[in-house]
Amino acid sequence: MSEGKSSRAFIGVGSNLNDPLQQVNNAIALLHELKDTRFLAASRLYCSRPLGPADQPDYVNAVVAVDTHLPPLALLDELQALETRQGRARTGQRWGPRVIDLDLLLYGEQTIATARLIVPHPGLHQRSFVLYPLYDIDPGLNIPGQGPLAELVARCKADDLEPLTSA
Ligand code: PH2
Ligand code: MG
Ligand code: MG
Image (cartoon, rainbow, N blue to C red):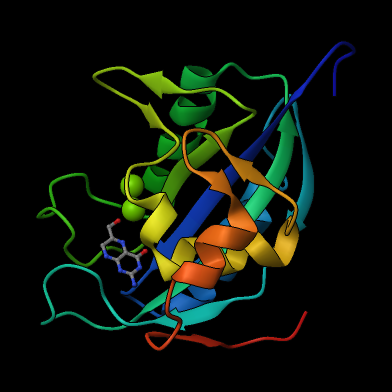
């Protein structure tokens, strides 16, 4: 990785099609190779009941932490390229099933609201499948505009979520 200051970013990983467990593991492997970026940690993997249309398979979800020199939109470009490389078609219905989903959840302490990118990721603060994996990696984290992650986790039920791994 190049010299100079980097930003800590968190990436949500999700899949509920074509062997989701393998899709998520594959995505985590690919995230190790992101340019200008140091891979820091992956959360446990979770089985998660679908948010949105109920007539779709359960998801496997995880969160990855990186330190990156890529600016937010360049990182988003890389994540979307990985989604495409892993067979994601960008035509699916909103909140519908997908082979792989890589969401830029947090980028340092930044708040971003543009047509292409909203950070922190909308809904993050109330989604069990994001909050619990984030907590695995960085329990002291503060969510811009929302407050301490620990408080959000304490308020969020986990009855739709089950850890698959203990790492
Ligand atoms: N992603 C969605 C819609 N619904 N549900 C779960 N449990 N996990 C997800 O990652 C997820 C979802 C759209 O990105
Ligand atoms: Mg997405
Ligand atoms: Mg998503």
